[in-house]
Image 1 (tube, rainbow, N blue to C red):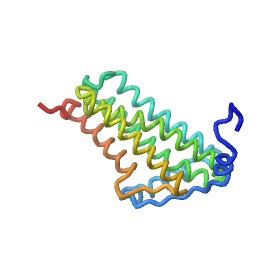
Image 2 (cartoon, helix red, strand yellow):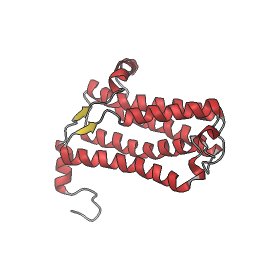
Image 3 (tube, rainbow, N blue to C red):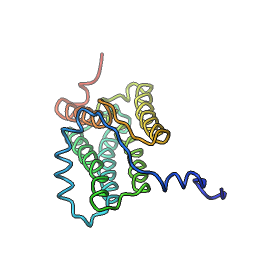
Image 4 (cartoon, rainbow, N blue to C red):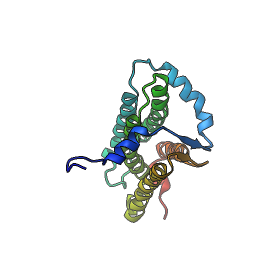
Length: 202
């Protein structure tokens, strides 16, 4: 392995031979599949799947940054519109993340590198989703809980992908990433309607 090379020869070979394999028993994925199938049919075939991925990530980051701007310490009450915007941004991200692979298969451009790019973007997104959820519930008043929540989000993401690396199959449980994202959207909407202070305990 050369000193400036990130992956050794066997890792590069494994990446080259990788085939996407997924097992899902998610409760909400079957309900959302018709929406995702409709959405991918609306996307022009010339649009690159990686562009869909990066647009989804950008939307998610930008809407989360709005919340961070209004409540950088996760203690301030963000404006209602910012909470609604973050919920909409997360929904857009979730939808685009669900269709980028469909677009790749539809256009016969599915590659292991594309999957790696998608999951790399997901890892970045996990940070912003976790932070925006912390802001919407004003968990900054409890910094150890905030750290724990962000740590758990990243650990779950890492473990899921480590399992995929070991087994070759990405597995989703009944309550998994889609359900977690919907719950976080609900948190943003509740904070938008009632104010983030609704989550405070005496």
